[in-house]
Length: 173
Ligand SMILES: [Zn+2]
Image 1 (tube, helix red, strand yellow):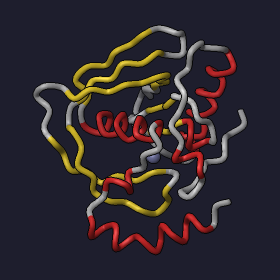
Image 2 (tube, rainbow, N blue to C red):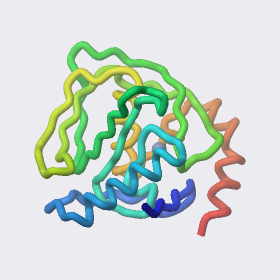
Image 3 (cartoon, rainbow, N blue to C red):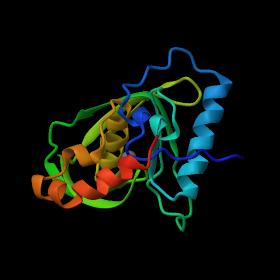
């Protein structure tokens, strides 16, 4: 299976607001599977469609480890997340395949639910997602709104990485 090229910070597509998927097609399922392969190859734990140049509401996630007995991939079309009532804010270090070599703490809700359409066209809901999964769901859905984790880092981290980000953006068309 061919892998996608991953778009890097500075590429306009990463700032687009993605369109919802009205109708699931075999082509879209194929794209989702190709995104999963691209994510495993990188390697990463999540990938959103704009990161491969497509402005559609699609993310893929798998927070299991390659050495785990079973992997647990999720394909999510039109995903929407909500904070659970007993959620607490959590600070956690994030990175992004589209923003290489930058890792910073971001504070986000610690417990969320997510609704989406899966690769069979079925409406699904995952409740009480925590840890890396909760983190990843929010990070990937941000991508669908043109938001990157570096938009959410502290002022001091922003100062620290400003020139690195500028250089990264300059190398993009
Ligand atoms: Zn990302």
